[in-house]
Length: 381
Image (tube, rainbow, N blue to C red; front, side, top):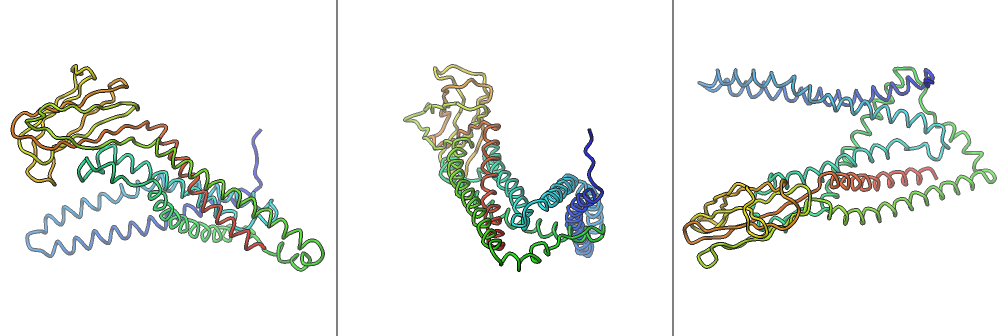
């Protein structure tokens, strides 16, 4: 049987969705205006330079043609904010059935929880993706493990970004929500239900009962906050084991040791090893062999040693097709006096890592959400 919402409730939910849509549309229009003004400013500057008129015209046409693609890229953001607005409006309707103690500020914590979870989780997974794909390896491989960003540092930075963004989202949505309720002729929440009985509550036992309810609610929130902190500490340790496994170092290839071999232990579903030649002279050949030294059919790589300790030549071996176990990274000096070879073995289980990152983002963002709820309870005293 279909569930029919009252007309008032449907209009309330509509106001929430329109508030989310209005927030994003305003930002999209402002961004488009800035982008368009930048295009015209660049055209005016370049067209004034002799000999650049045709190039300026072509560049402007290309930039103008990119604006529809820029607007189309906002489609999922628009859909997401409309859905968020609908959810928040539904929560607002539901909160009006709760005791007055829990009504105030009930909508802010979910926004901080949702935005924080998305930002922190995305930041953690983005850092692991950049590392595994080789986009975060500008310096030498040998020191890559020691230079890796700490999980706590990523969480703190993600929290700062998410708090700022969630604050902007909350202020924008609540402002538009109030306006749309007025434009749709919906009754705004009144504080009289609390204020009108304030004088009565201070008489007799009602005032003490309210204080007792606030105290119990505060204890619940404090308990949840302590639990979230303890769970966060445990999850950081679990995520440290779930994120990309990284082993890096270096070894020498020279006339005294022309054929060194490094053991690689493969344990996870996705793996690759990056190898680079740094300071030295001559060339080195690199290949992946079985533990017994047998060929595996993987391509052999040849690298040239560099004259500067800051220079390098790098390659990588994809190891996903190999069974779990031990293998050898075999190096062979081809000519010259040899030099230094750096390596970085990376392994990950993407599904488990993503799940743990999501849990970590959820618990991390729950802490500021609980703090906001605690502040709301303190104000309700």
